[in-house]
Amino acid sequence: MSEFRMGGVHVPRRSRATGFLEVPGTPARMPFTVVAGAHDGPRVLITGGVHGGEYPGIEAALRLARELEPEKLRGTVAVISPVSLHAFHARQQYLVPDDGRNLNRQFPGKALGTVSERMAWTLMEVATRVDAWIDLHGGDIHEALVPFTIYSDVGDEAVVSASSALARVYGIENLIASASVKGGTYSASSAAGVPCILAEAGQVGRLDEDCVAIHLRGCRNVLRHLGCLEGTPDPVGAVRELRGFEWRFASASGCWYPSVQLGDEVEEGQPVGVVRDYFGRTMQECSAPATGVILFLVTSLAMNEGDPLLAVGVD
Ligand SMILES: [Zn+2]
Image (cartoon, rainbow, N blue to C red; front, side, top):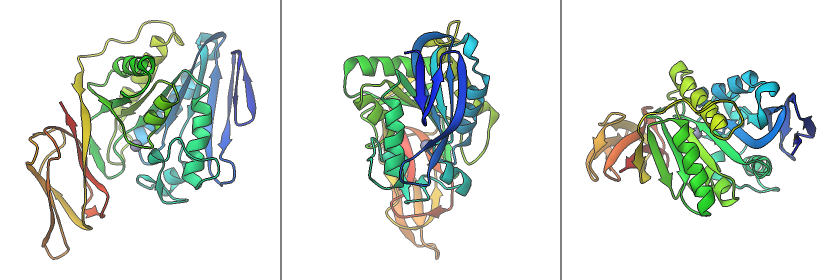
């Protein structure tokens, strides 16, 4: 447990290494920092930018990587951000530009798959060598979002329980234990026996400092909770436990006119917006998929068939 390997680099105890994790057989590569503490302890993976337009999570991961000092750390923290470097520079919502796929639907990936499948496979190789994985997200460039943390409630009881503890200590009010999105980081990680949370803070393409601070506090709290950093986690407020996360998708392309606001409490079946064509004709009347709180809402006028419109956190 005295050293960690990343991208062909061996990182001995009490040291720091930076570099790029290459994705075999593709032009993709991921910037990483590994900080190996002075003493043995847990290994933690922190990822930002699985989606390239979710800036506060990306930036929080980068700052954390710079602030961690080997002398003050137990164990090893591996930070990879932005994971989807091509999407980051393309300012691309949701998708990896190389293959047009949503990376957070490709896990655990394939060794010989498309670019995003291979990226997922490469990340999973790292994830299966750590004791916990914190995956930082937020609303994408065209999404408004109320911060929330999500973890998988299926699989091994000890893993679910450890993930739940990480989510609680992260400090975001809205907490979702979910059967999870197929192909997502936290579901694949949990299935592989590695506790994982996906934390969402930030929205609409802004580098918002309050949201960077939410992620930084969350990561530091997790590292204190696991014993990697000295001290106890900062106190956090009461949580709102949500049973799930229900999405509504566009059935037609056109213009999107939501009639609810972010954070609104809605009843199942309540009208929440309309997709119209370019001549004002209604293409889709959208109703709330469940009773609960609007956790994210697409803000762009442009809407594409099959894209998410909004999601409701269900009490
Ligand atoms: Zn995301």
